[in-house]
Image (cartoon, rainbow, N blue to C red; front, side):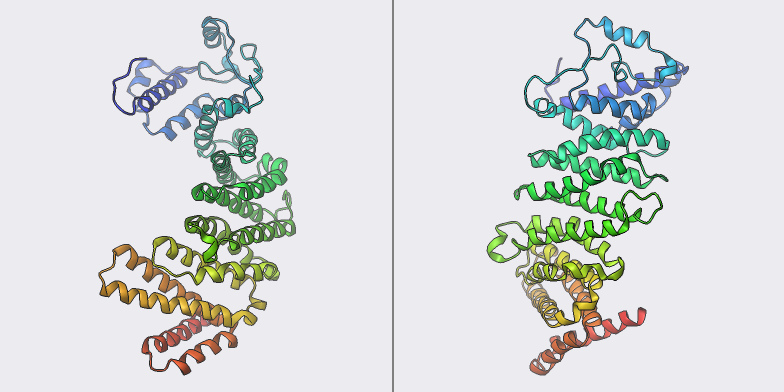
Length: 448
């Protein structure tokens, strides 16, 4: 292959090839004239090209071919290229339109090929992984595909996702999580529950939990992806748990969510203290935003205050996060995320929160005071725009959290405000904050 010695030649050649495949697949088995195909504009984005190819040859056929390729069960015969020609010339149109070079699984032109070593096929040939992730994420989420076809594509996608989640390499686990997220988003748009849910539900739940525990500390973005997949899966299970044909009863879903939230809280709790952070601020924030917060929010909407079961471990993890000092974006992100977690935890475990009111209000008020002092320092020393915005955001979220704390925890939280007013009466800003917390808390109570 000739190159033009310009960076990116591989990507451009690949896109050109895909556009050629798109054109060929639109012509195959149709009566459209060459002129009509030539003048019809094709999209240039990778996702749209892959979606077009999927529609033209059949999403179910493409997904089953990708699955076979990923697991090393698909290869063309080693005979000459005449075999390829025979595929395109002698296929039966009634069996469905398919792209040249692709044959249905089980065809005489396709043979099973055992891997040449003990390695998994996608480890021997990494392109198997990237091809599966890119193509499947594009085709299974496209609209206007009937349930039967989408159901088949999802059933082909899940074994690949689970295989990757079970891998030892974090990047592969994240790719599996990405495939699972796409599958869940696709399933959420269907009027029926796809068959993969009942077939793989217990395995998905355990695989996600195991992947989170195995994920390396040096990969915060990848861990965030896995946590996001888990929270989306738990939410999907919860949405359909009350349906007559639910694959998992709502009581079991509640237990799953509690266990998942507690597991992550314990793991993160070991790293939130200053001595254990070790540069993991970004990792902790990612887990909070993508993993813990959605689970706590889901628990907060369940009956019988299910968050009570994890209230103590939740506070033990969240309150030290709120007490972090510093003005970096990483610290501010962790503080804001922790405040959001605290609000959900208090809402979900409201019956026992009054006994924790003093320590909660103390930590939140101290953060509010530090934010006010940091804002004053930044204004006087011409701090950066990002630092000013993040500090202001932290202050506003802390104010809201303090008002929620007062509304839920009552007298014990109020005692902290009285203590501030009686011991710091000369500090106008602190007195002002106490009044603002009471006013906002009353507004919240009136709204409910």
